[in-house]
Length: 197
Image (tube, rainbow, N blue to C red; front, side, top):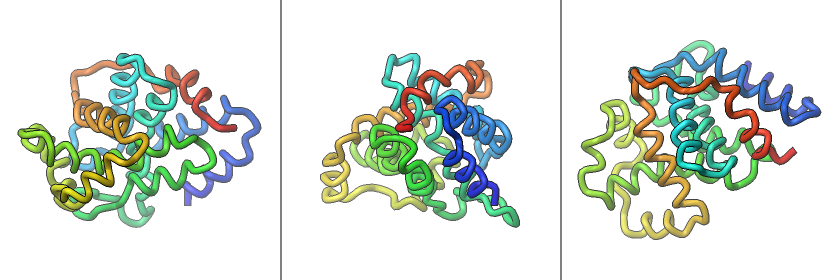
């Protein structure tokens, strides 16, 4: 499957810039899915990364914003397209596991926790759920809904939970059909800086 092919090519690449461009090409080739949102996965990723960069965040968090939903694409079956509003595809774990050894925890943890961050914000912030897109509301219920007090404590115990909350906020804002943002190659410097090797 193409995701294993990508992994093999990333492992074989000798330079960080090559790895970054392999990821960019993958997003450009496979990022046209929408999953009930009006924006494509690529448009969504670019808007999230733009918001992170505009906020002056680290290369690691900008990279996390850029690739936070790549697990949706990696979860696609060649025979049957993925629909995360009908079934929890665990895209956050898929992406974080896929990137293990490629990026540090400062990238992996916000990606892995951004779904939990949605549940967290819907639990602790009045009115947050109502501001979610319809597709995000659907997936929220599949992903576990409101957190218990114990789940909140566990979530807040993660080193990068605040970054995950920031990423979640950008995720929810990165669905604007009218927004024009820079191309994916704009983030080469940040992605290269974030790569472990």
